[in-house]
Length: 611
Image (cartoon, rainbow, N blue to C red; front, top):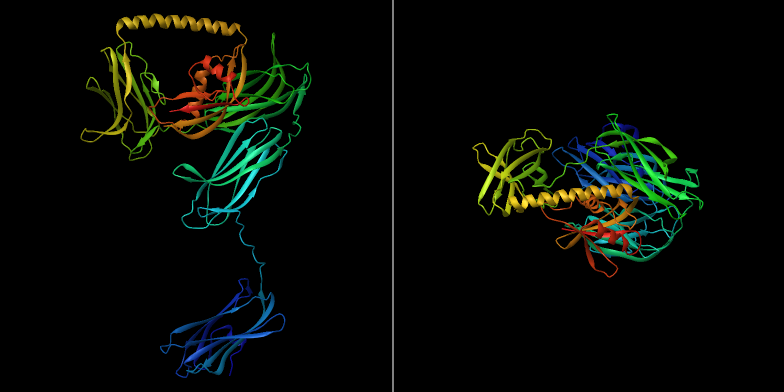
């Protein structure tokens, strides 16, 4: 007899075989139907072989059958029998699964178990089109590029799709967009991504506020050991940019407030705020200022002001940078005012908004054995420009800042200062047990006039008292002045102080114009351009265009922006390229004023920081 479906709900026995289980799927979406049964010999009369037969009645009424044979173990162990048949017609199928006895030649002798399954669904997916291959190189495939032809919102989004086709293909890639503006100025933006094994999109958003026709070049590069190697390049894409009408937030005295940009969180120690204004009539005020009033977390208050002369009737911006070093929640209130002889007349009052300030990350000049060198001061010369001041009182001061970053870091430290030429050294020891940055200082007697070569190092003090050097700085040249020269220097210093006071008095009498200058700086280390950064720097200008203490503030801002990329104990210089293509070094306010007057290609000042 045949064991039917009702008897197969549990363990069934027939003809010396025990049916342990059967597996038939309800839905098939892979194009293959797989059916499995498990049987076991239960008596001596069990057949030598079993046959699994699957009969399929398709939605069109066609009947097909497939069979597979399997030997039954004589030791009584269970055996699984499986079969895979094509299953490609979409719709509801009716299956009949039979387990039959077979002789040694494979002929069917008896049907032992049988079951029917109605409504087995076959799901057929639409065939996927082949992956597009616009370009292929170095086991990378460029599958797609999306560059809009028209931009109307001031920002453009560009997407590319990449696929790795081999295991050694690059995973770290960069998407670079180079934009040639209608006025001939050029700028670039880059974004980095890490690819997986499937095709992945990479997108970048680029500001495009200048109306007109922009010419774009899109590059895809692989990043190998920090360097970008071009793989694909799409050139000559024209993009039409139309400026939308400015958003009007308020209007007063023929001055329109079009926008304000204030970040919600600050983690770099300073906040950059920008407001956008527009003169709507010829009688509108030209001398405007942006005022920032800051309420600190401890309740104290302070304010900052930046002035600007607005000449044109087009939309213009006023930007300022506010120092925010205290961690916590600050409340900043901004105002736009007109500068008059009687004082500032407020035009727009922007309500206060909360800004969360977090402490900037700890500087890392060097690291060894879970000890980080956070700062260096050799006779007034600080990183990254370790140019020591002359020693005037026969005492040289050296200070280093250290931080422990792990429990097993050393706690006993020594600051060692060696005078290479004199062949002598000075050492001071200190115990640092916490994880906050701490300083170690040393005052070294220097009585012999002349130039001295000084080496500074930080060592760990071992249990036996021996010193193990952790961090070393390159030798720094220090000049020791004799007493006569010191007296002369003091006289010169007094004259300089008097001159500085006179200049400050002149500055107070002279009306200074405050402007925010857009700057693009390229970092060049050992002759190789490595990093490009854009920033806006507030400067105060005299009537002849010369900045007031602008060079010092610019060097501080530029070195701060490249803090993580500069190498310690190496001097830096700032230069620009004039209209003749020559590289001109900037070392004073006068030279910076000349650079501002000889900007090439627009208001952007392009400079190079060389180390």
